[in-house]
Image (tube, rainbow over all chains, first blue to last red; front, side, top):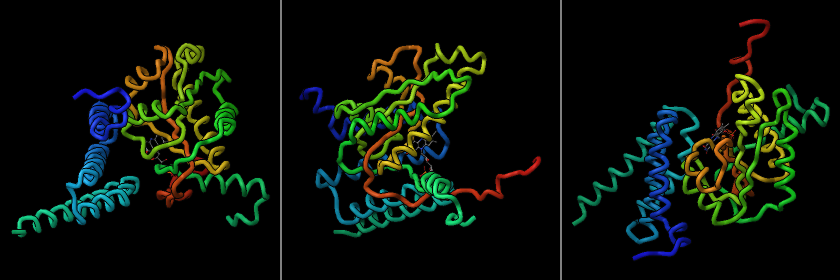
Length: 103
Length: 179
Ligand SMILES: Cc1cc2nc3c(=O)[nH]c(=O)nc-3n(C[C@H](O)[C@H](O)[C@H](O)COP(=O)(O)O)c2cc1C
């Protein structure tokens, strides 16, 4: 279905699409650490969309909050940022594990 | 150094410099146009190599245009009330000789700092943004070929003033009377 121009401008998927395309081009010129940064930013945007569309649960909402509140660690150096990403991965793994165990 | 011992002007300048932060979350509140113009004027009072002043500024206040710029700027966080695009005019910069463009970039940097400090003194948060797509921005804003957008400055009333990211100590980087 076609949308008028303005709706597209404010559409959350279109925002994500624009972010991905401009990040892809931008990363040629940016510091290496911005690769992981843009991906985890994408994850945050995706979690936001999932929440709006009710494809979410308490753990995912908390994961989004954790990312939002700690993404600034990228400004504190590589080690800090890596620790933050490890924590994000750990939280994701716990969510996956509990999904596996759910019957 | 104990700041209390400094003359008022020196203390205020230092506290303003130290207190400014890059703001990435804004509240939904407009900035008066006269404030935005004052911020640009503060930028114009920055030093300029050979006083060529090859700087140009594009103020974006329109909601749809703000959104459009955000879409092509992965480094832009939050929803600012305004964005100023700091540009260099390559034709004017070329009058500065072979180093003209490098000097023009430095001119933009001196302006940027003045503008952020002016904004901060007005209670307005700002963030410089280098992570934007130049080609997309030039297309969206009809920027002429000889004008190069260098940085975006997002502006708005902050949701919060964040903790400062760490800074090096003076003794770590200062070499007195030689390396
Ligand atoms: C030239 C330049 C480009 C920058 N680009 C971005 C950017 O694209 N996105 C962003 O969020 N911050 C950007 N920043 C802000 C820096 O991350 C910030 O200044 C730094 O982490 C120190 O934090 P402070 O400004 O709060 O003291 C930029 C800063 C400068 C000077």
